[in-house]
Length: 306
Length: 285
Image 1 (tube, rainbow over the protein chains, first blue to last red):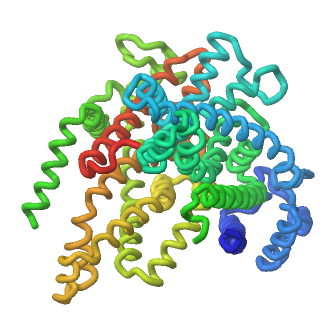
Image 2: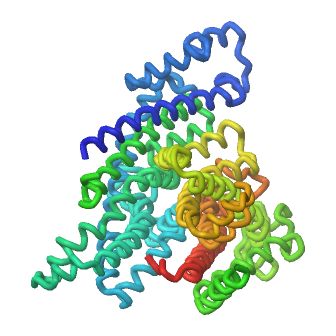
Image 3: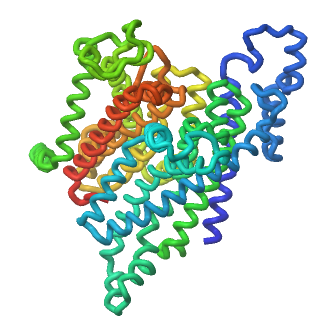
């Protein structure tokens, strides 16, 4: 277990380094300089600007300087918002995105696991068909359609909930969290239903029942531990999807989180911001994948001693 | 060989035709593809024709699904958008298919070190935020349609390579492959004549299930303004336009959204049906 852990951690480091390097040089391929505004800048000013932003150094020097900065948590200045550093923008957006993602995953887990387990236990009844039909809708209706529809229904028609912002009006966190969480609730419901169905047929469940455990104990203590492994393995990759979802949800609901900063940076071609956030996102995703891998290893007794 | 092959497929077709959801899905898909192909002839207006007097108008006899803010016929725009959306779906899936199948066959067939290196690369790529790289490519090189195909295809091949590798490993120790090897068949014709025909089933299933994912990715990018650029339109850009004016002109969001959702449903049901038909062991999960 410890050996696997150490091995995975050591694998993550070169991967991240490769990603950062690749992104850095890809960005350098982008056409046009960062200061190609509509208004031409005088050569002297341009030279000073380049000096300030370290663009007069050789590519290699720029790269090593940047990487040294990144290791110390300094992602350099933003090209489009003078005076603001990329690190500052990440620091201001991250808590919001993190909170949004946490609510979404919480909603997804509670709804998804409950309906999935219930559907598996009551197979081929209405308690199976109806939640699974709703789950199919959740998978087929993309976030960028679900969000506006919820806004239209609950915000504009019924005037129940605010439709923009984060933490300014009472209840403005509800719609974004549901929008982001719904698709995941659907996936998790399907995964936990499938996992539970597989486990419920196995011998150890029959043994548990044979020794006279209550159905509740059988399900909660024996079946769910194995049946939910697919859900745990899904959570790591889900973080990457949540991130992409946060791009959409934060754009729709005008939430000043990291996802919206990233989309704005991409639309404005704020290259340093794109570079910094890409590296930061990659690190987060690699980290969460690691945790989810280790959690599923730990939950599955068969793979513990490998 | 020929006989056995055709009986597998005719069995599958029999099972597929008995699956109502899959047949309805397939029917919708055929209708969609035909109307996308025939868009220039069946669309009531051109996608860029503007009825300037009208502006945004709700559905009426002249404009069955209404018009957008610039007075363009929504039905026509949805039909033309279908061309782009379906094209992205099929071409990008094709790219993913070519990369994934070749990668999987090579890794599975050669085994050993080649296999473990190739699959380790897949493992590593799995853990990366690919969507961000697609965005990065679109930002750096501009949103060009072919780049979009390539970038999306380059993201979606990973699962395909794993599936194909698993199948090839199962096949490569069977007698007919050993016999072919003993007869000195070259590697290339081994892939083409002996391995590929035997793994077509899982490939077809996974490809059908990849198309909706690819279409989602395209419309996601277009929604953010990073995919298809005007004046071209895909369903993603139509939904984006619809969202911007949904408060006053709800139909501009509802109809493109409904079309897109129905298409995704159809693709998913057809793909699930195909999977059940070709491999009765892996029923629903």
